[in-house]
Amino acid sequence: MRGLNVCVLGPAALIVTAVLIALTPMTSGAAEPGQTLSSPAATDTSETTIAADGTVCDVTDAAITWGLKESLRSYISGTIANGEWTVSDGATYKTPDFGWTAGSGQLDAGSGTLAFDGSLRLTGHDGILDTTLTSLEIVFDGSTTANLVFDVFGTTQEGLPVDETDVEFATIDVSGITVAAGTALLESAPVVLTEAGSDAFGTYPAGEEFDPITVTFSATPDCMPQPQDVNQALLSALIIIGAIIAILVALAIVLVLGRRRRRNRAEAM
Image 1 (cartoon, helix red, strand yellow):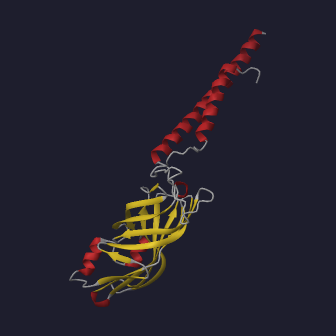
Image 2: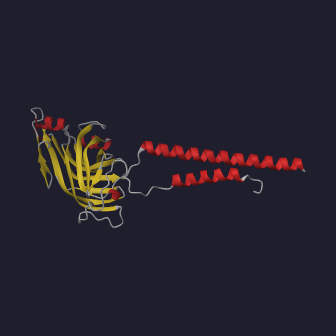
Image 3: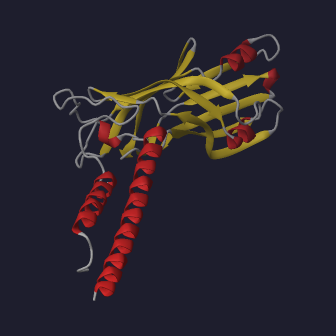
């Protein structure tokens, strides 16, 4: 390497250092997209949230408010279906929303399951429709989408029998979740029926929008989903790619200059 120009190697070294810095994860206290960081003094330290390693939350106080689907409630209670809905085992109804409380589970860096007791039974058409939704769960996988899971049994609106467990009934957009003062809040989040939910429920096609859902539970920012902003991720990727290209160009220049210096020396001898 004696023939290499120090003036060329210097900028190349700086570029390599810049790329290494860009690839290093940020560990500051900045809030992730969709999150509000609370101060240490405001963070909940009760027994409902245990964050031993900073990323794990044991939750016992989760609550859901959800209307299921307004048009469905209107149809069931109307003169065509002439039906009703009943709640049991801990589920509640207060116009216009159904409620589930005391949900429990664990979240680890944004992944995990919250489970709720309670059953919702829908009946109508002189008993032809008799569908029960029970064993509600919200399953997080660390992304901006969570799954709403039910056991579904009884008969559909068409009178077809159904007895399915762990049905991924609908998806929930959790990108708007916030954490402040030790409480996670997902307010009026979009809910969309899945293919599996459509097959089990039998009334609507996959992709049908249901009523927005609101979920609350004790949490810390670190144990919640932390999806990366798409635009920021793209910008970071472009910066890294640009830096790599710059390194390759710099190395090419180094090689060319090295060969030229060696050729000049050979011609001078």
